[in-house]
Structures are given as structure tokens and as C-alpha cells.
Image 1: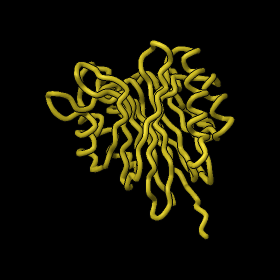
Image 2: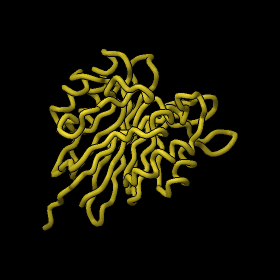
Image 3: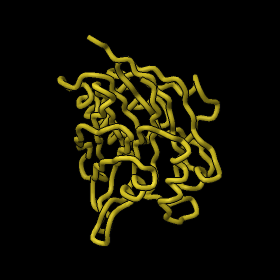
Length: 239
């Protein structure tokens, strides 16, 4: 089965022009026609009403689940996975290191017909020792027994070279090498990208067919990251 997956740090839907416009994020994501989207830095529901997760889900016509890591001004805040396929299961792993900003990874099990694919949405910290701890912990969660079938791990790793996270995760996963697909591989900051912080890893009978980093007038200003999009082909064993 072929499908399209994307990861996008939406920066609370706050653009490079400092305007908070969830609809602009939806206008960036809509044309991508992704089947599964991993979002980071999303403001969820609070006392004053629904959050950006609901607004984006409604605008894109996708189901979603949120994995909040903390409260921001009375509202949930964290990661969101959106999907056009049924979400069968959702869980969250705590990646917080010491007294640093709470971080997490959410996992959803998505139903593709009678098969399941596991998608992990990650947002790691900015400190070196922090990421070293988080990468080891994440590798442990991903390698847990009982989680069978193809796995895709994607998100904002706050790592632009071969650092702790990449070294740790490539022991249990394959890493998407953007150099095989793109000349311009930088995703941060949005308006003038100079760093490549967003990554995709995978395991199982997974093949990456195509990769793109959309550079449109909207995407360059809608957030402080650009979305990273990949066309994936997954083969399942039939018995």
C-alpha cells in the first residue's frame, strides 16, 4: 500500500509574521494531500473552547488524536497525529529529562485494511545531554516486544547532524537520507531555512518513494518550520 506522510512543527500556528492563524497552517497542509500528519507544538482545548487540533482536523477533514505534554495558559499543548485512516490505538511516552521542558512521543496504531502500521510522533529537546537521554528512552520504547509490523518515527528531533538521536535510533531503525531525494534539505527557520531538524525513521518492509519540502509563499511564513513530506510504500505479509 502506498500513502503519504508528513511531519510539521506548526509553532502554535504562529507564523514568521507573528500572526496566529491555524487556517494558514491548514492552507499549507491541504494541498499536500497527506494521509497521515505528525504535528508538533499544537495548542489544544482549554476553558475558552476547542483548540488548534480540532480546527485543523475540521479544515482538513481528518481524524486526530493529541498527546499533550503540558499546559500553556490553561490550554493543552503538545503533539498531534492526524489521519485519513482509522486510528485503532493511541498511547504516549514521557521523554522529559530532569527539570527541562516536558517532552513526549505519541504512538498511534493505524489500520490499513486488515493490517496495522505504527506511527510515532516525536519532539525532542534542545540540549545535548537531554537528547541523549531521550534518544535512548525512545529507542527502548520503539524496540519493545509485542509491537509488530511496520513502524514510522518522525517529528522534530532538534538535531541537524549525526548526533545522539540519529546514532541511537539507527541501531533499531533505518533513517531517511534526504540527500537521495533533495538538493535543498533545510526545514528551519521557515522564512530562511538553514538547519535540517525534522527527520523520518522507519522499520519493516517500508520503502520511501519520494520526498519533498514544500517551499511556497504560505509555507515559508506560516510557521518557523517547513513541512517534510514523504511518499511511503509498505508491503505486508499475507498468510
